[in-house]
Image (cartoon, rainbow, N blue to C red; front, side, top):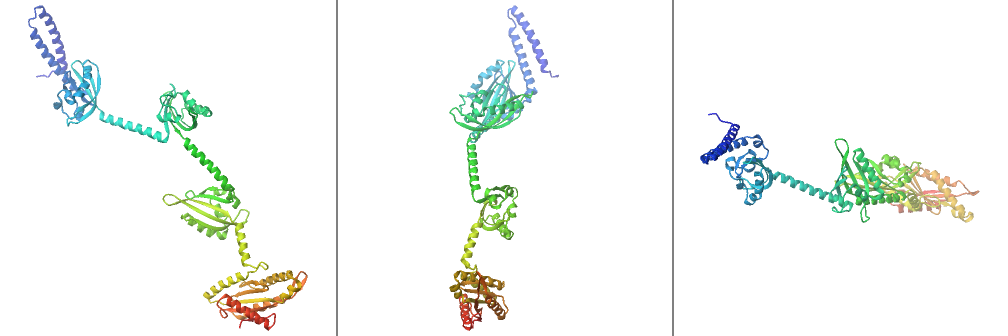
Length: 593
């Protein structure tokens, strides 16, 4: 048997309906006979027609391929069809689901959607959010959209709200996070409609301007009025330029709040343009940077103050960036000490090494290397400044380490200690030398003798000690005066220095007494030769203030290690030998015996 199409069934139904209408009128004329039979025939055709419509709807691609769960319900809320998406969402098959929609939800939920169902039956679309019961027993939030399809059927599209609610929750969280971030960073956002002069401000933007959300309308006029009077022209020109060019902008400006409080803001904006190239919106952020600017100003003031102090100090202060291998700070004091412009140190880090005294360069590099290894170093060295003058420098270097313990910066202080060094050297010289002849004094001689003893005891080298005085010196003082006596001592010292060789050490012990250490000789004959040379030289007259002064000297000599193992013994025995020489006749010398 040929299977008829739904279209044929519908056509047949229309034809039969028209025929039945004619027969009804006819039966009415005849007194109603046969009306019951006609109604039965009519209902049979209607039932056949409903079945055909159901089959046609169930095969419609708009129903079967809809991305959401979709149901077909009759006016009694009986589920006639459901697509695969409905099965996937709710877990029911068509066989399991062919029941009233009321069984898929609670009584309260069904009561909630009754009006929407009635609206749909009245050929009007309706929507309602409900909880549908899954085949496994749990509820699923859905949005039902009821769409009528004639008077007997309607579509029910079920939109799963779980993902949508999740998105809403995520968006809500993101929005809350954005508000929180804006609050803690003091950054607000804005969206200004250029065409309609309307703006949307975030809550923090209102806070920055010091106005209430409900009491302030962010129109262009009101915004400009909130800008500090001295910044308004700049503000307006910047915004207008952005609108005219379509280019973004950045600027700092002051806000004048209603109570007179000034705040400093940083604003950054982008321009949105339409398809014609016209600027229609400004979108951007504004940040209250008052505290930041206050700190920056304080830092600048501190920096200026520090520079003023460091530039007036008589020391050089520097800072060296280890990673960049360059000076980042060089005070005016460096320029004063080296005679070199500050820029030369900042531009070329090798400048510092360039002016170090050649004899001190190795030790300076040694200390610098230890500083690079993280050790705090304090040392002294010499430099030759730009004018060629030698100076003594006291250097303190302080390494700065990062969290990993790696040296990233060196800070240093340089002081010119030349005068201190010279003063110290003068004090040391005066403490160890005779003020009249400038020869080493007894203290210095004994110290030198002790060091020589230590060396000779280890090396087994011998040396001789000369003890001498001037014959007739008291007579010179008494007859010619102390001034001539002093000059005689000075000339004697000069004559002795000229006679003695490099392996000798000459000192004035006091009065007219002198001492000499003679080192590195082969035998006693060499010592005798030196003694004779001194005796002969001292017999030559001295010309002092147009006076011809004659004198002589006597010498006593002791030897290490034969005559003694310590300084006092050697000096004592040399003095005794001097006494023996004088006893033997003035202008003579004697070995200790």
